[in-house]
Image 1: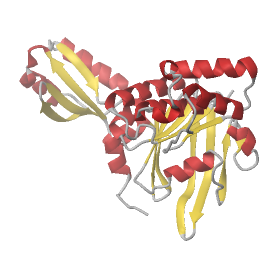
Image 2: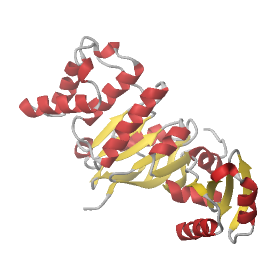
Image 3: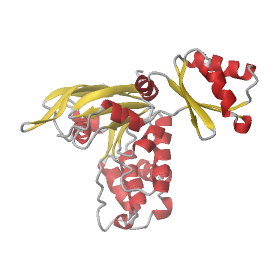
Length: 313
C-alpha cells in the first residue's frame, strides 16, 4: 500500500480576475505532518477547501486514497476530516449530543456510534466536559470539540486550517500533542498556521505558497538544509572553554561561520551526518570534553522569509 494519501496535480482556482490558486501540485504522506504556510491571501484556505470538496477547481484535480475530488467527492468526504479556521457549535446541545449528532451524520449507527463517540471524546480530553453546553466551552476546549467532530469517521487525511489560532500556550501544546498522536497512528495531516515556531516543532514536511503558487515543497530537514547550505551545529564543552573550542573548530575542514553564542559555539558544517560524526569524534580525541553537540532545529520562519517576498494579492 502506497504511503501517499493525498496527491494534488495542477490545482487552479480563479475568483473573477484573481487567480487564488495557480497550478499547485504536491503530495501528503501517511503518518506525516505537512505544514502549509504562506502570507495572508496566498491561497492556503482555498486549496484546503478544494481538497475537502467544498470548492471546485477551475483546473487540475486531487486524489485522496486514489479517489478524485472531482469525480468521487462522496468517497473523498468519507476519507477526509476538515477542520476549518472558524468553528461555531450548535446551540442547545451539550458536548456528547453535539458529537452524537455528527456521528449520525457520518452514518454511524447503534453501538458502533456510541463507542466511537466515547472513544473520540476520551482521546480529545472531553470526557469530563460531556454534559457541558457545546457553546459554553473555552477557546481551547472548543478546538478540541472541533477536532473530535472531525475525527469521528476515522479519516485517512486530516486537514487543519489555523487550528491553534487564539489558543493559550498550554492549549497549543496539548493540541500539538493530539496532532502528533494522530500522525503516529498513521493519519496524514495537512496543517496551516501562522505560528511558525510551533509548527516547525510539529511538521515532517513543509509547503510554502505565495500569490497562489507553490514556492517550496519537501521534507523540512531537507528544505532547511537547502536554505542554510549546510548543517548548523551548536557545541558546548565542560567549563565553557569557548576559546579552546573555537581554536579547534577554525582548523577543521568543512567548518565555517564559527560564532560564540552564550555558553555555546555555533558553526556551519558542510557535509552529511557522517561528516558531523567524524568532527565530534575528532573533538573528543583532541581532549575537548563535549557535553553538547546539537544540530539546530529547522527554522520555519527562516524558510518562510527565504521562500517568500512579502507579495500579497
